[in-house]
Length: 202
Image (cartoon, rainbow, N blue to C red):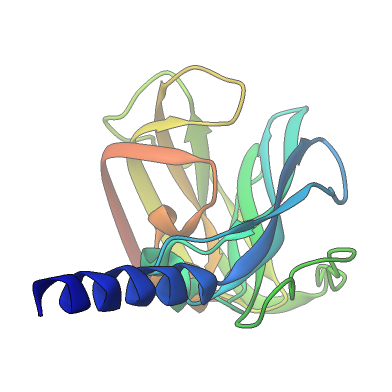
């Protein structure tokens, strides 16, 4: 009987492993897309993901194309328009999620970013030298679906860069405020505070 139960357990493990979701895995810095190997995901993963993440710090732009198994904690950000945009600094990510084997293969499709002013504005300031806040000396005109003003203070790390102290005030989409800075793929935030409020009608 014990031998029978052991055999059943082994068979169940094999079946479970065989049913793991298969996703393409790759990253490519400063590129529009990437391609890589197909591999099984952990048992708790139900979706594959592919996308682009971009951050601007003055003239320095970092863009990352990525594909892989979707971190379950980031599933609420699937299909969301996550945009934080100031004059000198901005964060943007597009993430596509799907739930079948190898479904994240192929090119990453990114819709054009809307640039039309929408009648809202927000205080505008940024620094990568302090996490204690910054004082806005002017406003930034919001565009597209940016209808929130975001205020971020804390420490963050961009891909290929060191951890820095940031203070940012900028326009943001409601999706960005709802899913937060932790929805970014490779940009990491530590000991931070993010507050959002309705954008100011021009």
